[in-house]
Image (cartoon, rainbow, N blue to C red; front, side, top):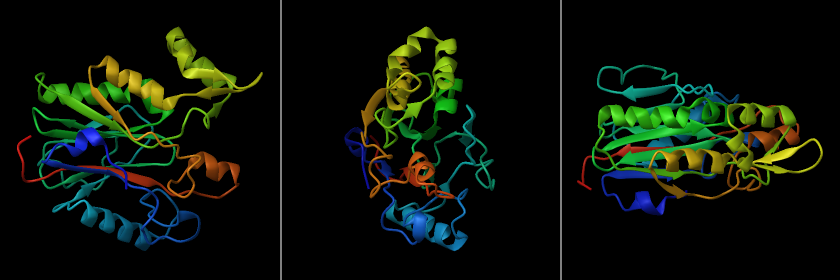
Length: 255
């Protein structure tokens, strides 16, 4: 379990970037696999999610997304809170007693809190979503609720630039969008580059005047703590687990 020092200061929210440890799943999913999209046994995933809700003291419901690497954001309200699926890569709410969760296995989990309006959110930022505007769209959604805001973001464990090897086509896609994106790439060899996904999403947040904090850990290298899509691919595994990051608005405190 990992926490943001900045978010820890606020008494009316709970948050946590969970590791892969302390759950019920077996084999390649050992042990706190929270990915409903994985091929893990549903009973284990359900038990893992119940455990997360209990640890987070979520009184009502833990909301998860059907993540598709899009730039779509949904606001959860009393009107739509009973939906079975939220097809988006970011969710935002002002509902108390509920949790918002994002599952990742190398992509960037971001949890957000607007202290002036008691609004929380979470983002699933893979390279596709980040490139197509998921970060900007989420902040726009916060500003739809109120333009008078003070938003804090914690950027969680994700694949580090030293571990994120990409080809020339990947590089070209970013450079076509903006030549300024060159700063997020390092040359590895003639055909490969290294991509700084954390740096890329962090720059977007800072540009939007968001107060940013980091849990700066590499999901690819830290096998004992995190699931990793890239690591599972390299090992030739058939599937992979997902770690969960959660934020909730409690019923107390007025920070």
